[in-house]
Figure 1 (tube, helix red, strand yellow):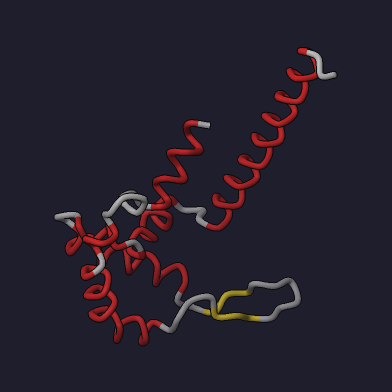
Figure 2: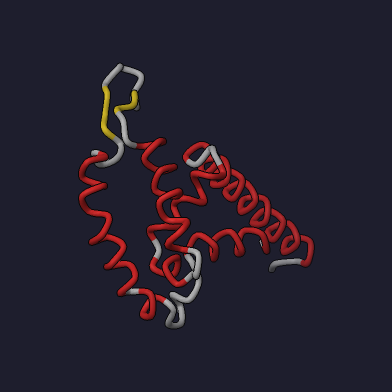
Length: 130
């Protein structure tokens, strides 16, 4: 039979494990997106971004942040193997119009329930409330 003390111990154990997992996730996100501007710039991949009045004026700035960080060869492995971690800048420049048009076309659909919040924002809100 499970006693009250057993239940409290199990609940505390689950809470401790969830806290540990969340801290690990936040640490990995900090490592992957070590610069706040870089994290903010990733918002261009969500259709909801294009519903903002200032989206057109912010887009090129966000794109430049992403290009500065990702558009070059980077050493990704200790053995010295270089790997391109993002598409070539010339390809990005050539496809901007198609990308933005596609994202703007999907804005309205993206605001239907369950998609009505940027998934990154939803995750941060959930983690903040945990």
